[in-house]
Image (cartoon, rainbow, N blue to C red):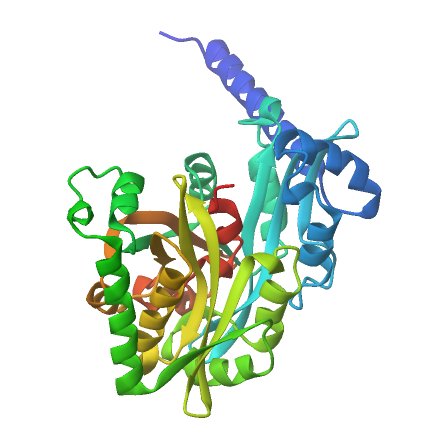
Length: 383
């Protein structure tokens, strides 16, 4: 039999322990602040140590573009939160504010990016405190490419897991693709590059002959993007806004603008779509990544055929489509693409109670996502 004194003592001990835990997490939460210029020196020290001295995170040019020139930036200040203990930055988390089109309405949202915690402060509440602080400033947060540790944290914080993007590969040099994919039995060993590349050209020419679609390489985007957005944006229930000011900022204004190859697609005198391509190393092989595109659904097949052949002409061993575009798999397969594996996770967190919006966002088939929607193309490119 346990005495009433023992029970009372045990309960008091548990209450005291709970109070200490609450007090600790409150203390951690109070140490999270929004970035201000006075934090720059301490922040750069942290970033050089844990991201690397030559990475984009330690660059003033990158920070100015990301936090100051974004046309959808938060008017209350930079979308960057720091955890500071005894004058030292021990964690950071940033977001990219965007406008999300949900059916016929527009919503402010933000991509979760650049979440880093000092090793000695991991599993001590810092990550959750940073996440909570940034979530208070955004009605809707989005996450793309979340790794396992980050996934566990956001899952505990009530984020909705929508699923994983798909990676489609269109081989253009079959032998090199077999080596990159580690598939010794890959059929490409029997197919010379001339045949694969030739098929890409033939498909493009046939598509152009039937539809009249042609590609126009451009140095930078212009107001024609607004025409594309007006015509093609409505083909998708949920997608990040791709008007001129958004696209120009993302691809033409930033420190990585020289890495992108931009195209308009035309039919007669009408501009019907655009694409952004980027060359990169994938498992040691040169590939062409399709960072972004937008086109009316009815012209998707000839535009994608043209993209594949443009990458073929520039020497890529494969065209990589890492995306969420329900309904496109049939077109990609007809163009010779293989769905190699599920790719990275996509999640969201809606602040507050809005059942219709939550339902719309949770419908996987409603979304159109590309690497350029967040900073996905920077994260996954091998140097």
